[in-house]
Image (tube, rainbow, N blue to C red):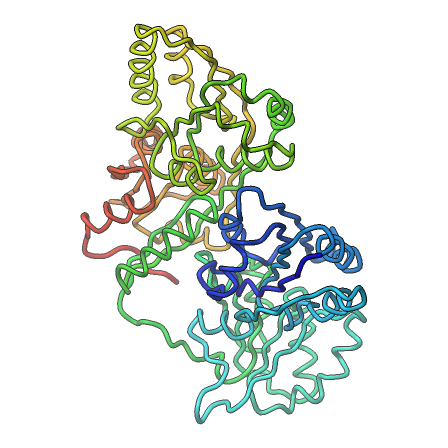
Amino acid sequence: MGKVSLIGAGPGDAGLITVKGMECLKRADVIVYDRLACDALLQYAKADAVLIYVGKKAGAHSVRQEEINRILVGCAKKYTRVVRLKGGDSFVFGRGGEEIEALERENLPYELIPGVTSAVAAPESAGIPVTHRGVSHSFHVVTGHTKDGREALAEDFEILAKAKGTLVFLMGLANLEWIAAGLTACGMAADTPAAVIADGTLPQEICVKGTLADIAKRVRRAGLQSPAVIVVGKTAALSFRDRREQRVFGMVGTQEMMERFADGLTRRAADLRAAALMTMERVPLPQEGELAGIMRQIDAYGWIFFTSRQAVRQFFQTARTARLDMRRLASCRFAVLGEGTYDALREYGIYADFKPGQADGESFAKEFIDRCLGARSAGVPETEILLPRARRGGRKMVERLRDAGIKVRELSVYDVQGMPTARWDLVETLQDYVFFSASGVEAFLEQLNKTGMRLREGSRCYAIGDLTAKALRRAFGERAAMGEKCEVKAAPVSSVEGLLDLIAAQAPESGGQMS
């Protein structure tokens, strides 16, 4: 029998989980997590930890609460350390109480680790205090979505409309127009300030301000999506943010990479900020099932090559699903491309045996071929290479290896798809852009062409490595004929820190303005 730890993951930014929560997360044997628990936190899980997703989206509930309760009870009876990772705080509309009751009925031990609630953190991240001397001496947190529908909340409008403090609605974006109308119908002034913060504390955070009379219209125009926090009251008109002119970097990459970059940027300078323009999401492919079959004969491969962080994650996720005994990897050696991939592999307790001096496929192939030639002359028997990779990965590396007589088993196990964020409309106002992959460059250009947008004259594009830089030069080489030019710079070390060092070394006078 194990103990269940209910951990509040915080409002979105992975850095806002508590120290105690992080320590508990790292020791967990199984992690049951939901949609609002930051995915970046899962990288801290043990390599053999079991991950169970029970997320829910409005209108498309994937797992009922009763089933989540059963999962927690079952896990507590099977594993020693069970973590229930919930967005925000477990007891602020997180239904943590219901999960505790289910554990108590089975006489199972548990502990509670509080989290930072988005009710306070999201407004604060947007520069809005929920209380302020002389303006608001209290705040009231209200659910904008109830089990009994709108009727239950409607009964409270008359009380809420007379409240003197700040009103904070969670999970209410779909009901925003109805909430605003309900408050004004019960006597709250139509010109009462209101604000909606979507993706609060995250790089793609966006805040729309207005009044009860027009906030719903403004939010629809901005295309905001949940999760979002609604703030109503005089403090919603405040904006306690650094008023110095800020240089803003538009980002295209995975959620994890963008969060790491944005955090590093603000740590280095208060006037540097980042805005997520497009999120790249890893999508497993049918051949991922073939990889699961290969796990049963993994020791037949002498080398496993990884060319991206995503490939590392997909490999070990599949290994976990296939219940691979990690001791079978003892006969394999590992090669990685770039510092970021090296770090991702190290998170699973494995240090790469080979990493080329330059983070590009041709250098990878050349240096590895030289190594193999030396091994052949020493009489070392050859073994086949397993290369799980992205569907749109470069071809030159594999071709050079095969031309040298090296056997390569190549599997396209994931694809990367780009989705524009609510900040996409900033594209034409910025001057600095950061790209974390060649596939991100491709998705960015597709969206530019689709929307008919153009970059400002003198724009700068920063690439995490040579492969990404080559993709940028190729793409903007084609657009240069239309008069659109962009300076491309590649980080000397293919990592987030390498990008930050490159930007610090350039230090141009100013960038774009964030609206």
